[in-house]
Image (cartoon, rainbow, N blue to C red; front, side, top):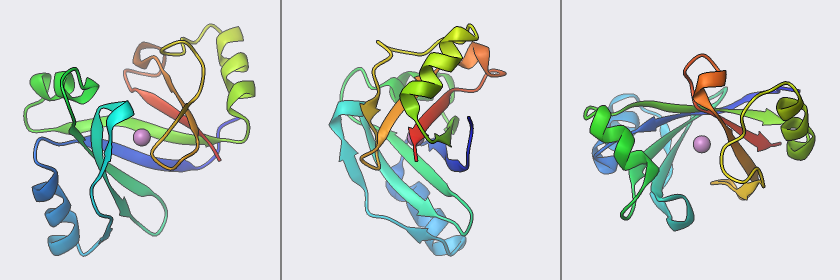
Length: 134
Ligand code: CO
């Protein structure tokens, strides 16, 4: 079921500063900031040779990342995103195995314009997992 690691997401309180660290100090290729109002975040993608890092800054009231930053004021790892070939088949297989899919279980369009779902961290060693259809 599970394929490549698509990205590691890190919640940050200052997106410009975090992006500058990756761009200017680490020398990585860093995208422009893109607001994603339907997800309550602004994202910057850092492209590495083998995967990506997604920097997430809260956008708007009720952002899911705002709560995370209240608990982790310095920022921190927010989720891992794994690629799957067929997101609905993956969802159905995970549910059949007793894993919890967040929300209504219908895939939403993620930051790359592809269908995504999130899985409950308590079922995955305390880590929020995003699935993206490759
Ligand atoms: Co993500």
